[in-house]
Length: 318
Ligand code: GUN
Image 1 (tube, rainbow, N blue to C red):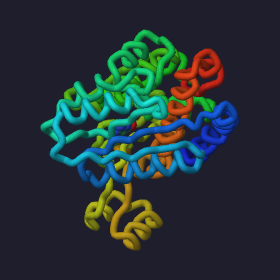
Image 2: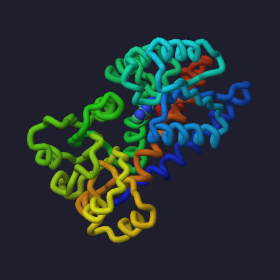
Image 3: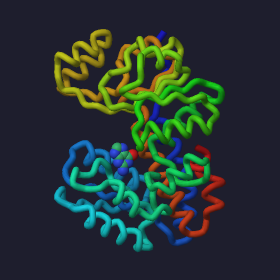
């Protein structure tokens, strides 16, 4: 039987609709939350991600600023830019889109972001708060995965969660969020021995390693919940024919567009998993929703509404 599809698109809409009363309240107090996004260079994927983030702000009536320093920017220049955004009272959230060009020291730039405006949750202070389960801004994709599970009635408590991928952006923070939700967590990576066997022990399996269709049915215990964090573009017709061999509608769509988005999970997993996030329309929209949640929470917290933000914000619940 085909897996239940966990729609991130729907959940993202719900989360953003729930933000509207908070945004209205801020507006009544004369505040329009503002997100500043820094996109260095011309990475096409990053350009699309940032454009989608700006659009989400616009739809919710938030201010946004798109800053595009050149690819040749130095660490010192970017740190200076971030410090300027820290000083600006009208800016509530600062997002530095990753990856940064190779000559830039990413850690130094992230360290420069005011933790109170760190809507990505990447500053070491916020990372520390996450590890020790204190209220703070949480990284958007992991927080989005937790919201997706919660809103689909999938409780990690007592379950074995296996996360494949140990990135600072997804794998590591998600492992801690699952642990705080009382899952037993195994964090796997490229050097894990017999990865398919380890993955098959999961009740909740998260694929977040950035490798197209890597998680095949042999990784999945029948009935498991599978969360696909990957977003990869495929444009090779031979590869598409192979991956979509049992999915004629998706193959047809590929042929119409000459490309398709594919996660880290193989399309055939839909026949084995109990629940599965689609790509596109799964985890991706959740990342944006949680960025909006964090931007509104940052605006409220900076204006002394910390207690209120903690009580009512989705971020505080994750
Ligand atoms: N690059 C990939 N994912 C992210 C993200 O969530 N935030 C930022 N800033 N950059 C990213």
